[in-house]
Amino acid sequence: QHQQLRDMFADDFYIGAAVTPFTIQKQEGLITHHFNSVTAENEMKFVSVHPTEDEYTFEKADKIMSFAKENNLNVRGHTLVWHNQTSDWIFENEDGSTPTRNQLLERMKSHINTVMGRYKGQIYAWDVVNEAISDQDGEFLRPSKWLDIIGEDFIAKAFEFAREADPNALLFYNDYNEVNPEKRDKIYKLVKSLLDQGVPIDGIGLQGHWNVYSPSIDLIREAIEKYASLDVKLHITELDISVFAHEDKRTDLKEPTEEMMTLQAERYKEIFQVFKDYRKHLTSVTFWGVADDYTWLDNFPVKGRKNWPFLFDENHSPKQSYQELTRLHDS
Ligand code: G3I
Image (cartoon, rainbow, N blue to C red; front, side):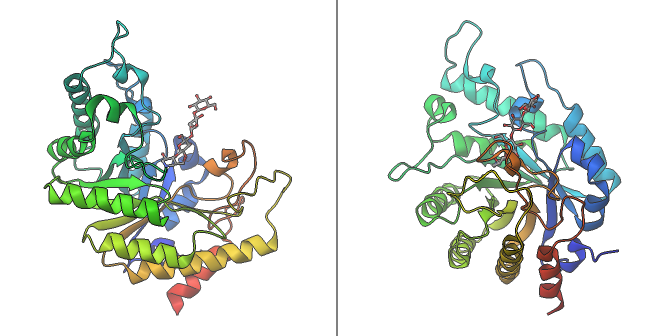
């Protein structure tokens, strides 16, 4: 049996994976052997659990929760307030009118209460607000219906409702492009202002959708350093290392090249070394999947283009990337 990832990093942080009802069947062996934390990849999102105002659908989320319970896995919840995968009904009344600020706040509160309440005490950390910062230069918050209808304090309100719903859960702000200096500074500014206002927030989630070439290890370190200076918890929430450069849209590759696998292994090693250096703040590292037979990157940015971003290959064998991490552990 291969050495368990979760043991290799037992003194550092949890090792997590995003799962689905399909992958907990297909990749069960790997998940239960190597990981001590899971996140539902889609099944706890607004549209999945709350398709219409009076209807909650928790079957798939419950399935993931019972899998976690049976296998003693910690659970990170993902996600409560987002511009994407959110049911249309919440932003539009039956008569076609737009809800008022108070109406939308009531709906937000009731959603957060119901979802967090159902898993109270079982989900130790939640991505309360996801991806609210803009990627555009000179624009602070991303345009969204939440922002339009409620105003900038929709973020603070979400955290307040979340704290009430489960006072013991750790509450995170989660985002991508999080080590890009402009976006990093905006995320820092947002979280600092929430903390200054006394808003209940415990941590920052760095998604970690990176590739074998970028971002540079220096940018990764600088971002972690800057976020850690706020003295909040840091979680890496959605780690994957694409084998393609950002601008590379090739679709003809049937398997990864040796060069890609070597670069990826080097990257994983460098990145995990940085994570270890910050283990005082950085307490969880979650991959956005488990093994190369299933990844959302197979449909992004090019639909149907295979990618190989993880530590385990399509047959669930450990890759060079995994081997490098064992060396990091032994050194
Ligand atoms: O559920 C439907 C299914 O009924 C339908 O037949 C099928 C046909 O395409 O689509 C299914 O929905 C897909 C859903 O995943 C569930 O598989 C959507 O098309 C697809 O867009 C959706 O993608 C998810 C994506 O979030 C949506 O934005 C990815 O699986 C998921 O990995 C991804 O995760 C996000 C994080 O939540 C936030 N950070 C970025 C990350 C990657 O985009």
